[in-house]
Length: 253
Image (cartoon, rainbow, N blue to C red; front, side, top):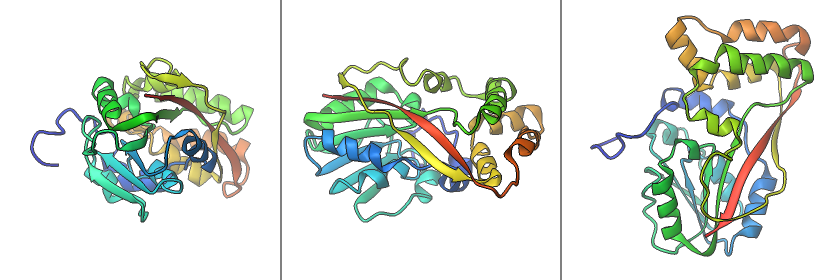
């Protein structure tokens, strides 16, 4: 990054960008299909805080062009290529798009890091009349009652003190974020994968709180947790269904 443009950027993920792109769950097609139906057109979308483009590539299945911005060069270096997605280095306050040019603006698992006032000003500027803005997030996954109970203890008690403070917005399903738009209800939607125990561990390894625990405490909290759930899981290479309900806030300008 150059100059002082990105000094306020809170970077919790660049150091693990490669693992993040491989280990994070992917959003369901139904999410993007519904957003496309709600949008006044399908010419241009802006995905802000795109990371490695997990949302941008899904949006691109329904839009002619997607501008995907992120302040992390490392994340963009691991982005998923798509012929209709243009990746750009940038923060939430400046999309580089013309006034009234976008049909859809999105922020996937990112809005809690934003200067929301600046982001909303930019979204209003670039969205066309009745353009759609959508923010979404996901918290703890669901696997089975026994595993979920242990995972909750790991999340809240073991690594809980090492989450950045912005994490509380995710725990509140983004209801704590201001959303000054004509909000409408969104149908229930969830991510779903069938992962083995190693794949689950790789995902948990991307948690910023796990990294924070290692830095502050000087040991790794993940192996003891994986060892604790392995007897419940069964064969480590046996896939299990894992679900992440999405919390979506969407509205018109």
